[in-house]
Amino acid sequence: MSPFKNENLTILSEFVSKKASTGAKIVTIDDDNDLLGMINSFLGKNSKIENVSFTNEYEALTYMSYNKVDLVVIDVNLSHYKAFEYVRLLRLGMHVDVPILFISVDPNSVDDFYKYDMDNAYFLPKPFGKKTFLSTLSDVLNTSPLAKAG
Image (cartoon, rainbow, N blue to C red; front, side):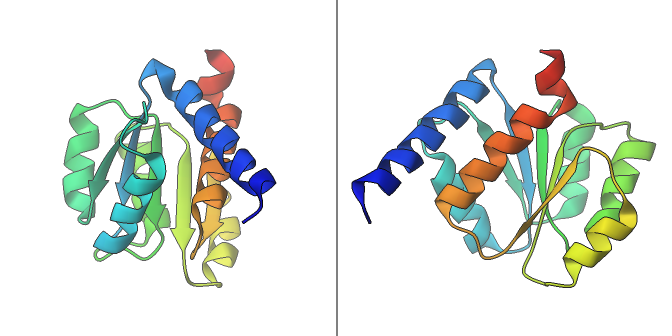
């Protein structure tokens, strides 16, 4: 890897940390423990972003009913729900209006994503690396209504 690429990755990591200096809290929902661990490692131990991970969407729902979150990262294919329906429940039923980052290995999921026509939602295909994840995260945090209001 060239020094330039390492420098860009460092800049992205610093940007995400600075953006989260207000104590951003992310909920990540995926039934793949390896992916959850990878996301935690991307954010780093010293990150100011608190990432709370769940393999079960019901537990995540319970958590979000009692805790304010700033972003939800969610796998499209969950055990009990299709993520798009789950997010509709979050937004309409629980009034959780935060940015949503959908992730999926299924290339057809992007078509489904556009069919649901959701506001404040983003899509990231799997697999992804650290640089792509951090870049997407910084884009989402910068373009969300919360970032514009604050």
